[in-house]
Length: 518
Image (tube, rainbow, N blue to C red; front, side, top):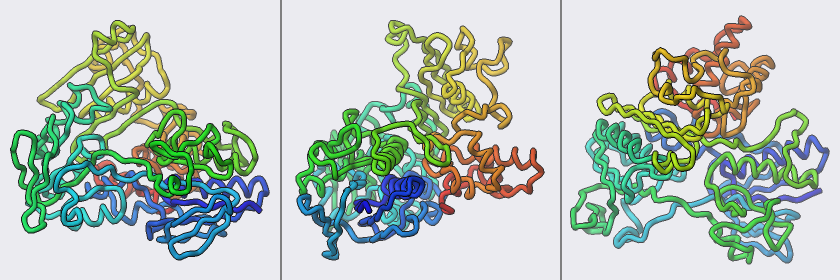
């Protein structure tokens, strides 16, 4: 029997355990799995915490599936020390756990900036949003008229700022760079997002940071900005990035850099019996910080441990391939602001032209919408769509399918022009090929959702259990609902998602509804 100890029970750690048990059962391999989790909760969808702040999900809906039967999960019991020579992990209750394979799935932790006064009084009045406890504390502090500053205008920072504003909080968003979400957006698109945030009543401060945290009798009262300006505030929400959690591995002598250094088989460079997956793992490509690659690593390591094989695209008994999507789609989940970014950041037009890429754009400030598309030949290589969800859906379909476009990409910007439609309409599930990926986080296709419906899984929660669709970022929930409703109509099955569909149409539905059942 192979003894596996897993340190960490977050989104990647729980997925690894599920994959390992499933593959071991299929291959008739005996495994004994012990999980040490420092948080006292069942695994949950960390990506949807901003949706809870926005009021579009509740904490209970974030629950991920419990560990399979037979797995020992010591919830709220952290790993304390590792003896690699004896292959023993000692937990916080001084219990020793023997292992044949030790898997680190410790994830990442918020990177707190070094600002004078930040850590004073035990960091009172300062929050990050990384855990359920962080989210609960922030929600408890939300009262109409309270003043909060969000430090960091990346994707999560914008989502949190919009969510807090929805709860009646006076919000200032402070970002060091010259425009918001500078990793994903070109400057004109980012300016449109900033204008939409301004419409919500959010004060956006760019090219700024915090030079000092001000306190009165230990209580946070304001933030000093470069130049001496002071922002009165009751609470500071820090969103300045994360860093891999490697202290335990480093203390045990496991090779580390930014993350735990692993080879192509996700094993520690000096020890075949130690592995790492997810945010804490550093491959030759670095630390991705994304959920889809982390889940791909979890599946790959599980197969490798059970079958003694290297990385592959093999399928198991259910015929389901496990691989990370190659294309990149980022959807902003900010309440009141619609934005989708496809592929790498859109390049500057003249620079792109020298590389054989054509960039076309339209900006409608009055309507707070803009479209910027980069095209090479007949295909989209990157795009940013703000304030136009229907066009965003169409362009996302064309990008993911690598569909050819008209010679003049300007037709992408104007619907109803005399020229042929530039991209296929996606309002009906009938226009989506069966091979199209619906859930990008988990690589779930339309055909897999149809097959789940045919097998009797008629509700979103059931489909999530059968296929894992909707259990990642949640952005595919409305598409899954549409396909299931279409199948209901085609097969005469009773509609089971009328309330879900109505909530989603009204913009109030939780994109994580299906997660709870898993």
